[in-house]
Image 1: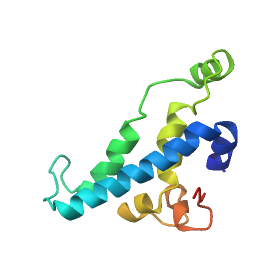
Image 2: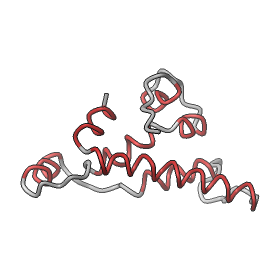
Image 3: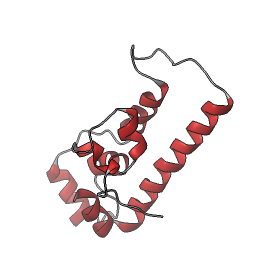
Amino acid sequence: MLLSFVLSAFPLPSFQDNGGIGLAWRTFQRYQSTSPTKDVEMLPGTSNDQLFWIWASQTWCATTSWATVNNELNVRGDVHSPFPVRGHAPIKNMPEFAQTFQCSPQSDMGSSLTSKRCHLW
């Protein structure tokens, strides 16, 4: 499992990414419950909840190669997961993401709806 590897190889930043996206989601939901707004029409047919998850994944978007990632890990000793993992693993672990996009529990991004989810706390 990707998340198991990430948590064992990069424990502290991975916990922080996982906790941070959960906190951001709960804060966003609380804001929406106190200030209900119409869906922003940035992408036709996309809800505010879906836009939140798109934003969250865009935070870690970068053009890089695995050679660059290996260099960062081996030469610089970077303790952070590579950008593609930081954008994918925490969101994959959130059942709220899978529910928002109606992911099948059998799909890669819907695995949080099953016992495969990594419960951090």
